[in-house]
Amino acid sequence: MSKSSAAAAPAPAEEGKKSKKGLIIMLLVAILAIGAGAGGTWYFMQMSSADEDEETVKPKPKLRPTTFIDLDIFTVNLQPEENNQYLQVGLTVKARETEVVQEIAKQMPAIRNRILMLLSSKKAAEISDINGKQELSLQIADEIRKTMDNEDWQEDIREVLFTSFVIQ
Image (tube, rainbow, N blue to C red; front, side):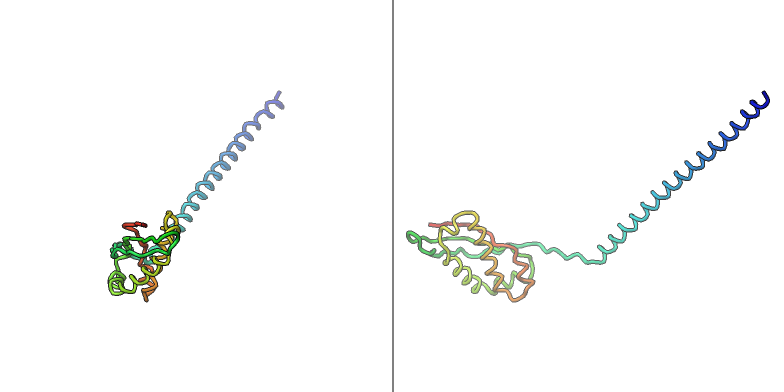
């Protein structure tokens, strides 16, 4: 019996060592997981703060408010199709509030000439539908931009809007 009780005695001691080893391994794994989480968090925080620093270095362009410049009403004869037709159109230029506003006023005779030439070159069928009107608006804006010498002023002209549009 002593042999069997001697054999049984070392078993709890080995079990205690195994449970201590398991506990130590679990603690090491937990510490590594916490360390990895903290390290990852620190790394990504450093990356995001570096991105914020780069953004603060680059000055953001100031957006200037837009203004609307009314042009006189244009009345032109259209290119003949089946009978004589004319177009009466009111235009407004949407532009940034910069020196371009004064430049448009200075260049008004040249701008009106370009617009009149463009409008009188159109046929009623070309500008009757929505796509034709949108294309015409883009073409008018391009004609106005061509009168501007400064590239910044050309960019300041945003679009041309129709305030009235009559084909008869």
